[in-house]
Image (tube, rainbow, N blue to C red; front, top):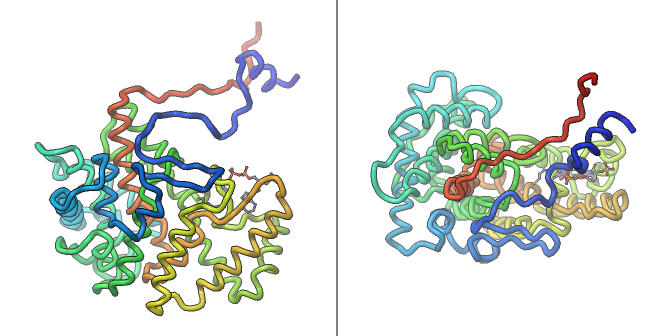
Length: 382
Ligand code: COA
């Protein structure tokens, strides 16, 4: 018996496995059913939310437990807009923070800076006012980073616009077509929450220590940017560019697999069927297609998905590996005019709503998350 096995046996532990299936919290926020391909958020199937209600409504659902009435929706929209504006006011004092190749790293630094100032705090009113301000700030900083990277000046937010439309305007420099803003809104709703994913878990761990809300969001962005989590959609677009046309998809995917590389946008830790969010995004892209802004990329994506699914099934007959949310995210975000290096920060713009809700839930649970490890190092001489 080797040292690790001896120690494991002594500690009565099983092999560390990435925490698959381990329940770390009770949550009323969302549930992922990986066998049936179902995502429920706040009591609604994702298909009933994305493209049907706006991001402000989804924030209300996550932060108050119910889809908001018109007055609450308006108050949430105002608080998101305040967050966007507060963040914009802080940009001149950020120095080189919003410069650099890594948009998520820039976002972490800017949001940490936002948290260190008192301006986002609300002395009175519901807790979601602060959540909305932080969520709003993420959009402004992400857009400002993209502008600076393109050599352009950041654009001030417009409080009269919805969150998705204003984010898109701050990135593109001019108001986007209605259909593009609607598609991005559907995307933000689709990705707002998704069970105990790695970045949400990260946020909850930080919240469980009694740390502040913004620290939890900063840590979550750091977890999100990894290629196995939220870092995949940029590489999906690179892949589609590399393939070029549908007839080349199968050969391209086969060569990647033969070289031992993973196909980005395929596979999921939980889903054993197609990620339901992929279908929801495909629907939103379909609407853009009618608008003429998708071009040939949707057909290429569909052909690539078919080829990858078939080849992965041959290689892993016992482990279904299907398209995940990132696959069609790449097509949608490109079609609405966002640069690919902004895809992961844009994921954070939507997921910030879920992180905030989980942070509140964890604070209410009030218990430090502190798992155990299995010692596999040397033991002291007797
Ligand atoms: N392409 C090729 N092979 C893949 C694969 C992919 N996208 N996803 C999983 N596999 C293979 C693994 O190499 C492994 O093969 P092996 O048993 O021969 O070593 C097997 O399938 C099981 O994979 P495993 O790493 O246990 O799955 P996981 O649950 O840890 O991984 C992901 C889930 C999402 C990390 C994984 O599917 C992946 O890397 N996908 C690509 C990145 C991506 O799209 N990320 C966004 C997630 S929303």
